[in-house]
Structure formats: C-alpha cells, structure tokens
Image (cartoon, rainbow, N blue to C red; front, side, top):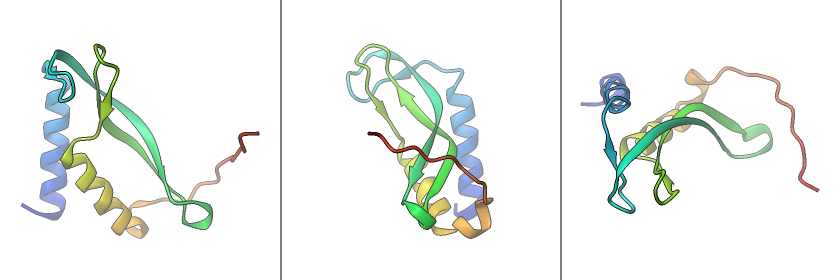
Amino acid sequence: MGGQASWLSSRFMANNMKTKTLICEICGKSGAQIRHIARSYGKGANLLVIENVPIVTCPHCGESHLTADTLHEIERIKLHRRSFAKPRNVAVASFA
C-alpha cells in the first residue's frame, strides 16, 4: 500500500483506536489514549505547522509518543508540503 491508500488506512486505524483501550508502549499499562496536537517543523520562511497530529498519551506514566504510521505520514506531509499546506499568517512570540 502506498500514497493516498496508506494515509487512508492509517487514518482509519487511528479513528478506530479512539474507541479501544490502548496499551502504553512505555510502561505496559492499559488506558493510553490518543490526543491530537499541532507540531511545528523548521523555522522562519521554512516553518511548517502540522495540525491534528495524533499522539498516544499514558495517564499512568505520563509519557507521550508518535506511532510509526504517524511519523511516516508526517514525513510524507513534509516532503509534499506545497500540495498539502495552506499559507496562513501566524503570530510569533519570543520566550524572554
């Protein structure tokens, strides 16, 4: 499977995982959940923000991680950013 079919399969699996009890890959306990976050890559004119990135979080050990499928999809989005990304103005603040 490749390209669009792979993305759809990963998306389907992620949506189905919301209803299942997940096992944390770090501590091995059940109860891990999928949350969606925004991640940024690059800086300045090369900044890319990817919204709605699924991460697995564990309420027991507090760890969060990205699945291999999610990492592959992020790399695909970064590689084809011109066809996926929509330009937006964004406010930027500096931590003092």
